[in-house]
Image (cartoon, rainbow, N blue to C red):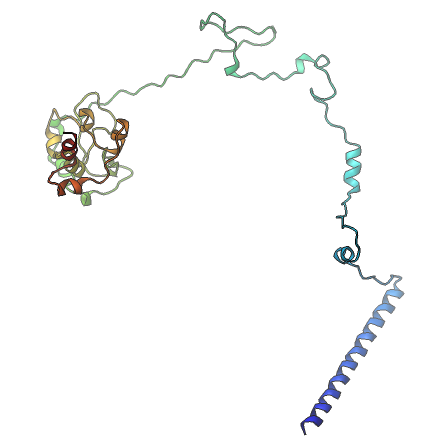
Length: 270
């Protein structure tokens, strides 16, 4: 039973294929007749360059692109006349020459004197104006706050531990030791030669690194910061003296029986 059904199916499939082939041939015939009626030659199938290259034994050379408009433009092109092409220096009008001067190429007298600059040989050219070196004016140092100006409110703003500090990039002050800009009160160095943030230490850094109380330092009129005393153990000051940075040495110092890092470093020098 099955072979008979397969034979019927095969006959039907072949009939469908033949029918579609006839339809395709009729469509192609109508298309060719339409091209002939309009006078267009039948289109030839283009053989790809890759197939041509594979069929021939000669090495394949990439065809050169040609642009007739660009070639014609290049043939009629004449470069602009400048001082380096087609003209001599004598034929150029001196009044139309471009003169470029730089202040670092000024001529000075041979005697080493910083007098007037030598004039150029051309009378029509103006004399250079001597540029004076810019001197950076130092702003006068503001007097530090005295111990009498420190109020109880300032003392209350001193941080007792690092968790009590809050970052404030706008109105905060920077600690010289940890270099964190926070809103807590820092110490004030009474040395008149101290400037910048060298005398500013927060409460936790001054206590853990040097064993001093920031509130007591603020009320002391003669207190001098560790930087001015030459005992600062921050990374910047130690690098300036050719020593390595200590890092977070507070816990190691307390485990060895020292209350602060400064005392532990002093014991190493003995």
